Image (tube, rainbow, N blue to C red; front, side):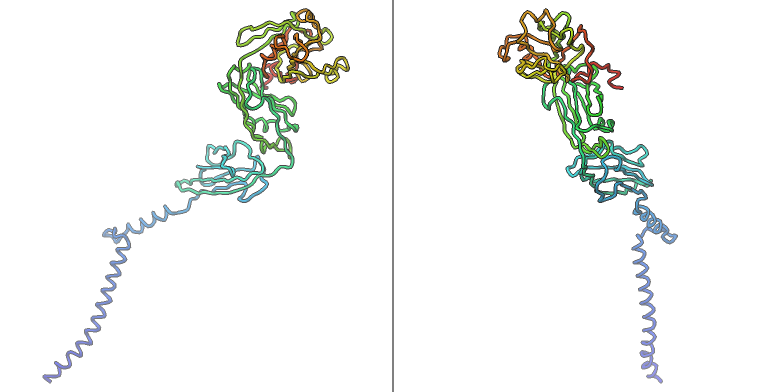
Length: 419
């Protein structure tokens, strides 16, 4: 007995020790896991059992939530043959637009405006034809979260087109009476759209308005003659404008010209003289011959639109049959489309000028055949004049010239011009 308890105790004790040791290991492991879980929770819990942990986790989900704003762009991504007007629209639901950019493949931006309520955007001008555009739009929801969308589309390629033939020429210096006149190759049935695509500005600034003569001509001018030295810029943004159903402009061009010195010449058909006024001073008075009693000269303000040192004048082209056909009229300057000129006259006696009206409606100045004598009145006036100078005819026994007959819109009252 003395030896058995001793010898048996280690065996029994060892068995009990294993069981107790296993319990202690599992308890330690559970404690360690609890510490790990507590550490992963942020270690910021309070004595109530870590209520802050779930709250912080909830805020994180709110910040990372998707924006509720929905951006819609029309036309859809990849669309082709898109209309150049009325098709491009950007809208936002459950949010407000903050950014909308539209540009062609060259990076030229399309101007537009976001509505005051932020719900929509539309371009303020038409798009160009046959052009690819990229649209980028961003909207924010009530929580300030952004939602963006990008699309690409291509506008139609028109089968029928038109352009505008314009005057004056780019880079030219012209007189104070020169309007901007554009003649279209097709009759326009949507004049508002076409006029909106043309912008005429001046430096120094002055109000400039357009007026249509028929459906194929549009002129621009200020209320009074241009001031000397004015710089005028004409921007033709006709590319993509639907001027008539199925007919689109294909022209995008910028023209600039300068107004030279102020020269306004006044022809008194009764006194048979022409006074040339430059920058407010009479520089010369010339004897003239105006229209004969049966073929009087129009009254009114006329603008020199063309200059020819020598040209042919045939009465048959302006309704006078075979009354005249002069192949070498010197120093001729056109005043009307219907055939009114101020020109040199070598066939009438010198005594005619200043004493008789014998022309077929033109204003004649003494000259020599061949336009080679620079000392004649006609040569002096020709050399002293530029396209756009004004010639005013008064005291003729004829009616006032129509505004559309030549570049002569100054004969229309401003109130009528802008109506």
